[in-house]
Amino acid sequence: MSPEEVIEEVKTSGLRGRGGAGFPTGLKWEFCRRSPGLEKYLICNADEGDPGAFMDRSILEGDPHAVIEGMLIAARAIGCTRGFIYCRAEYPLALKRLQLAIDQAEELGLLGDHVLGSDMSFDITIKEGAGAFVCGEETALMASIEGKRGMPRARPPFPANSGLWGKPTNINNVETLANLSSIINNGGSWYSAWGIGRSRGTKTLSLAGAVRRTGLIEVPLGITLREIIYGIGGGISGDKACKGILTGGPSGGCLPAAFLDLPVDYESLTEKGSIMGSGSMIVIDEDTCVVDTARFFLSFTQSESCGKCTPCRIGTRQMLASLEKITRGLGDMTDLVRLERIANVVRSGSLCGLGAGAPNPVLTTIKYFYEEYEAHILQKRCPALVCRELISYFIDELKCQGCGLCLESCPVDAISGEKGAVHVIDQSACIKCGACLEVCPEKFSAVVKGPVQCI
Amino acid sequence: MKKKAARDTTEDGAQEICKGLDLEEGATIPLLQRVQSRLGYISPEALREIAEAMGLSESEVYGIATFYSEFKLSKPGRHLIKICMGTSCYLGGGKKLLEHMSRELGIKPGRTTEDEKFSLETVACLGCCSKSPVMAVDGVIYGGLSPSSAESILAHLESEP
Image 1 (cartoon, helix red, strand yellow):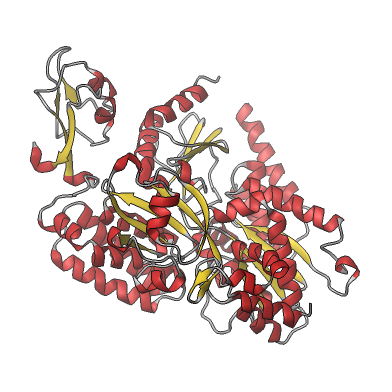
Image 2 (tube, helix red, strand yellow):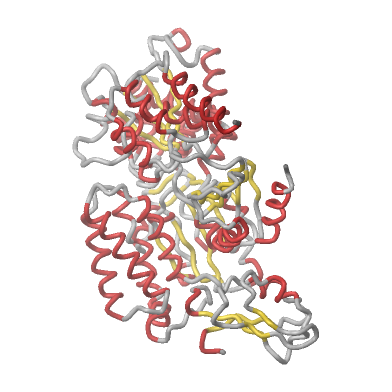
């Protein structure tokens, strides 16, 4: 197959970037192939930074050769001479096995000068990431390989024209690359037989959270959330109600249970304000507070913001401050208006995907769970009983048998009571760690968690 | 006496690591990683050596070292406890786990106990989301933890001399 034929086959397959953006892979290759330059680079993005996704780790550990094969196919199609795998240092086993696979491929003549006696030469170097979420963004990743602070830059120029060390560069995600040898072996139309609309093929999702069966799943695009949660996932653990699902990680959104019949594909998720992202799916039940979850995601993106552009640097901080106020019961309704206003500025004004995606959890939770924000603000109540300032632990005097287990477990000695007599929690000393609730024997169930007003 | 010896090794180590290295473009981060894996942290001496070797100013190297969360600029304890703060772990009780360990050790995340035995850190994600909440002790991963089961792992380490 000529390089052009390889690109055509990948275009036929409909494969799109599996790292998050969903850009058509064949098209991306074509841009880089057409870009003038003798030396071109290929980068495998294995900086799986989404806290909640681990499909890339699994591929790298389980089948590193699939990634190397994919890189060889891409290199042949584009005309790349050097390849880099940028992998997180937090994945030591993946790094070890990748190096082993590269060594094996070199021994067999699949990598190096004149691959299998052909005129193509290609080698792969592993670059270890050093723990910065923003390095998943392609221009930041390249800066990091160049040995600099991993900060993104404005595009254009696009990496296809001027990337690593100014050379035309193509970046693909681990999962994208791992799909390629099957596509070439079986043909693009074989791959595109799965899928829906413009989202073809299969996608690996990492299913976690409040479902019975957690783990990695590979599903045809277009499968519904319901099939994932109640079919593959076996339903919500503890037979609780499904509250929603977090898709796409910190740059994604929180979709309510009302959307359970939504097909999982790039367009449908984007239309609802979320994203596919790298494919993390975290199911939440009624015990999860969506306001606190939005705050959690914002605290992550805020601390990972590289600080280069103002909307992201200052906007994420302002949004986080508002969310913290609300989760502490100190918010008012104007905070919600401000949150939405800042979110829209950050989304449209940020330099890279980190800032552009950071408002998604905030905007989707406000849109779909407005009443939960209202409860925090107007009633100073956290319906899921998560936000610490809005809950209290107390002991039901009719149920307490005075066993003393809670007293022993309390780390701050806030519980008093004689053995055999009703115990009492000193609310002013209680740090609301919940240790007493955990140890209170089920047959008594005397420790109760409730809104602050309950006492 | 023992402390002095340790410090000498540190300084020698830094010089040794920077000597005779393939200082190709972009070597600053691999260099920092090598120093850290050898010494456990980036000492001020090592930072200076790296700057010199790469033809950068110390502040530039400091800027790079502090940008990435992997690099430590102070000496870590003998045991490194990392609590995962990924989404799945956070929602699955990671926050309580962190607070509990923080209380047990008497240190805040990012700090080291006075006897230099334990360092407590948070990590964005260990990629074990289906086993939440997760912590890694000296690189070994423990999943499905409760504050009390984590405490017993800690107690096992504490009983060591």
